[in-house]
Every structure is written in C-alpha cells, then in structure tokens.
Length: 321
Image 1 (cartoon, rainbow, N blue to C red):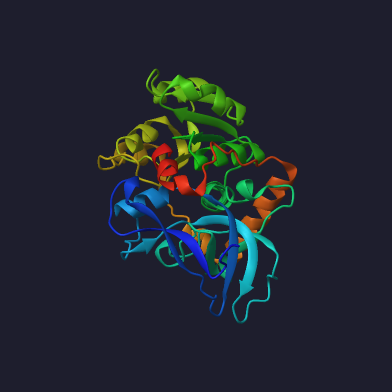
Image 2 (cartoon, one colour):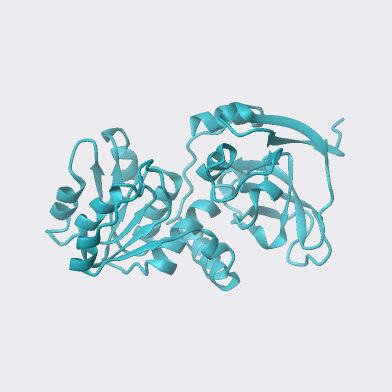
C-alpha cells in the first residue's frame, strides 16, 4: 500500500552536471495560506532548471535545493484563502515562483495558487506541463513587447527549442511571415512542419544574405533571440529599418556585440526581456492566458513533446536536454 505521508522529490546538494540530481523521500507537507498542493502526473524540463543546478541562473540555489517550474497534476490540498481551485481540479503550473523554494520535481508539489492554471480538457497531463514556459515566453516577446503585426517578418533564432517552436506557432497564429534559424539541416523538416515559412541553416548559409533574399532586401521586422553574443551584431545587419530585436537569453558564451552603427542607421530597438515581466503582472498574465487558451483550443498552438522519461530517469532526461 502506498505511503501517502511521504513522497519522492528531486533535490541537489551541490552544483554540477546531471549526476548531482538525487531522488529523495521526504514527508508530504501541507500548503500554507495562498498555496495549493498537487499530486504530480507529469513534469516538464526547461533550460532554466539546467542553469539553476549549475549555478548560472538568475536565481542562485540554497543547497540542498529543489528545482523545477512546470508540472501538471490534480489538486489534492488547498491552503487558507484559496478559492479559485477545488480538490480534484486538473492544473498545471506557471513559472511565477522561486524554483528553489517551490521546485515541482516530485510526486507532489506545493506552489502559490497564483501560479496554478486550469488547462484544456483535450490535453493530456504531459501536454499540459508543456504549455506555460514556452507559450508565455513567446507571448511576452511577440505580443506584449514586440507588438507583432499581421504580414510582418518574424525571425526566430535557435528555433528548434521549445520556446522557438512556440514562437513559430504563435507567429503564424498572428499572421506573420516566420523565418526560423537552426545550425544544421537535420532540423529543417521539423521546423517547416511546425509552421516556419523559411528555414536558415546557419552552418551552411549566411544568415544576413538569406534573410535579405527571403525579404526582397528589406530585412526582418522583429527578431526573437535567446543567443546573444556575436549573433546580436548579425541581427543588426539583417534587420529592416525600424525593426525590434528582443534578447531573452544568453546561450552564447562570448559577450554580446552591440550593433551600434546598424542601430543608428536603421533606428533599431534592442530590448532585453524575461518571462517574469509577464508572470508577475496579473493583468498581462490574464491576457496572456486567454490568448494561449484560444490558441490551444483552436489547435493553432500545439505542444510538441520531444521525449518522455520515467521519473526515476530524471538525470538522463537532463542529459538528453
């Protein structure tokens, strides 16, 4: 008979590679005021968790630390003052909390009620846990900050990532022409299948020349870039007059190269952006959720699941990512 007073969770006691992740058994705790506890059915992995366990994330872990932003499951306990959920509700979690304090890698997870969200009935728990990080990140960049318009040219770099795929789908939902970049031709067909109008393989063709060819020499209107480094200068060259470049990550190891002359000549807007701009603003978050629900129900937004691992293979899942 299962012991419901204890549950298995993932923690790490030192920074490092995936081998630092340990599955431990700890007592189940009760949610405090404004919190809810869910019985986890699936968790999603994000680069934020890899950066967190290696000490390179915006937040530094206090060891030993839990981790994880996204989970889907069933509400099984409510803290005082929580009225928007009921026991038995299907919910998934929005990345709107400290993963060190509320990490969701486990058989149960306690999160702030404000970070819980119902998700469409037609989605499985696995799909439900692959919604918020990618689509909220894309929404913030493309809609809230970028104001992407129908017919505009959107350039999505590192496009085979979960956020990249979300940006492609959302760009098409908004009526944009979407150019996706990836390093090799291996992912070309996949990116085209997600809705990209054009794919640039940067190991085989020049990004600037390809963008100019596909836009009749005009350039892109909005770029959504998690790379930074020297890519930023390249994007300046490929931009149209008045374009916006949104930087939402720093995958490159070298310092970012600011495209000063291109920014001056083309009146470019270069904007740093983080997801918490959306998740910590209740009004914008509500608008984002409604937009994403509409996309999910119409199937214009469809979570793409790369691979599913058993919970016991969490370290292998991190290595795969």
